[in-house]
Image (tube, rainbow, N blue to C red; front, side, top):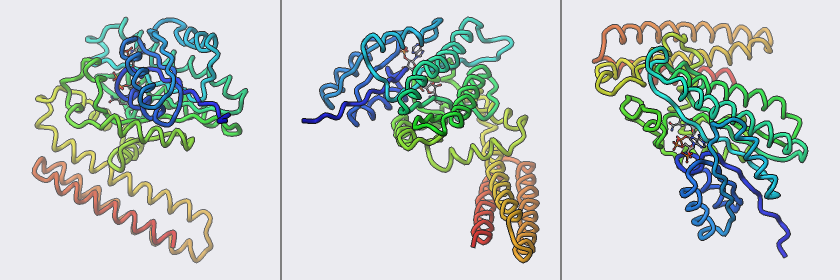
Length: 360
Ligand SMILES: NC(=O)c1ccc[n+]([C@@H]2O[C@H](COP(=O)([O-])OP(=O)(O)OC[C@H]3O[C@@H](n4cnc5c(N)ncnc54)[C@H](OP(=O)(O)O)[C@@H]3O)[C@@H](O)[C@H]2O)c1
């Protein structure tokens, strides 16, 4: 007799987009599901499909999670049904596009903050306590790649995601002596109904969207490994993280703003924008190589210190070179964008080489 009890995953926002893709992965792996959102029909339909395809049970909880104490109500319903939540996914979230001072509506913003921040926090509070008591469990919180950048024209949304990421990283530390893990998911712009609902379907950022199935797959793997964060989508998205850490906030805000402006208004800016990203990636690579050298230097013998001083000098001239090259490229304008990209590639290669040599 199979005595192994099926595990249960609770997913908010499973009626569409990334949440729905995550629900499919859990169902495929044999998890029973608790699906929470407002669209009862869509959740019931999903539950039926999961039963037919994978033989897993789905409990549907219809709830507007932007309401006061919505999380407490969901938690109580789960307890009444005698369910143990092994994995919690806080996916439900919305955005809102427009200038904060003059365009956006406060009531919508208040509901957004309630959903993205308060409900995520309260869900985590309620379910995490039980997980810690059992010394077992996993939580996935939906942040965003914009959680580490300013986000003009979606200022309140960006701030809520910064909260979720920061909150999650603090809990990673608080949980380190337990078997409970918490993971922040930082997707780049993804092809769901999100931008449409946020009133941002007309913006530049929607021209290049990631596949929600790929985002969910990367997130699922990272969650199962207990990673503290995951940026799906390979090198291009991860390099944006490096760029966000090394680029001055004002410049970053300018680039992000262009992404959130209407497509036709930004066409002429597109190439400069790409050059700016290339510059950021180059600079990031040099900074990383420099940091690695500094670490090595502090723990080295006198002979190695001399070696690393030489390499640091070389790295500095690389940095000067990239600065001059890309500055010229930006000044010369649109036609030279390709040069900036080539320079970026060269500096990444040089940084890699320096690192490899330093470690050898
Ligand atoms: N798409 C992107 O570019 C992107 C990038 C980074 C992060 N994210 C984050 O990913 C998460 C999922 O977004 P998505 O892209 O998959 O968008 P989506 O397709 O619009 O899905 C949003 C989900 O949240 C649920 N939801 C919205 N408001 C709710 C409310 N008041 N109460 C309960 N459930 C509610 C929706 O269900 P109902 O409408 O049925 O209630 C839906 O299932 C969000 O937290 C978003 O911030 C998205």
